[in-house]
Image (cartoon, rainbow, N blue to C red):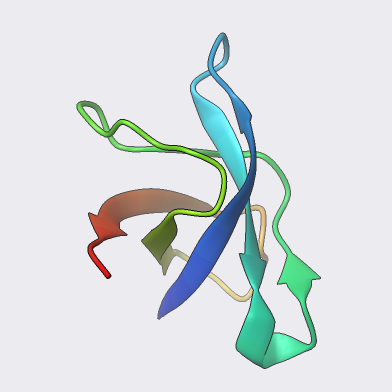
Length: 66
């Protein structure tokens, strides 16, 4: 499953981030990894690919331009 969300926090040391999904009652992921080469900022819109229904089992695959 893929979802669009917004970066709510970034851990640059671990190369992970938390994503908030506004359309899903402001659900927030656990810290999940982001793809190599992505430069993220708080508030960026991103695409997340999940491997299961667990919000900790995903990866941020792209930044979405506004």
